[in-house]
Image (cartoon, rainbow, N blue to C red; front, side):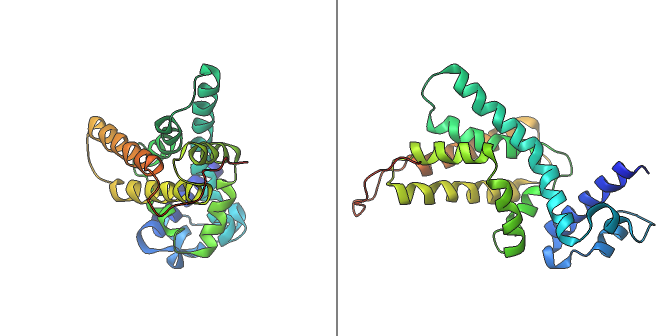
Length: 211
């Protein structure tokens, strides 16, 4: 097994352990055993620490997500037409769906859901949410929301959490590509509805523009 293959095997094993048993169950020794690594120092060599392994999982999964999202956003800019709520949501949802529902054996959506309750993992995820592609799509969703500024930011954040939870619920199930496409399309519709919902009668905050 090459070093690259060994590293990938441990990333896959750690993702699986966290997704199925929670982050508290993940240890470097456990990951090495799950990845069939005979070298007792393999995880330490490749990742340095438990936190380094967590960073490596997120980096490995989010790199293609961010690249694809950047492509979608750049395509919108080239077209020059006003961006719709649905287009903004698609730029958020579809790259994540491709890396989870579209990747055989993926447990990354279930891994991401752990970040909703674990502060350590949430901090690592937040670093990647501060990347350019996510910041751009988040700003679009805020700007296009029908709500006031504070509510619009909250709605955009809720759309991200809804996306993670919905993908986690569907991940790992056997289905046809057509069924997967329908699930993703329904998720986009649901998220667009959240952003496009009118203010409640009690809402008085004026709609703001994201900086």
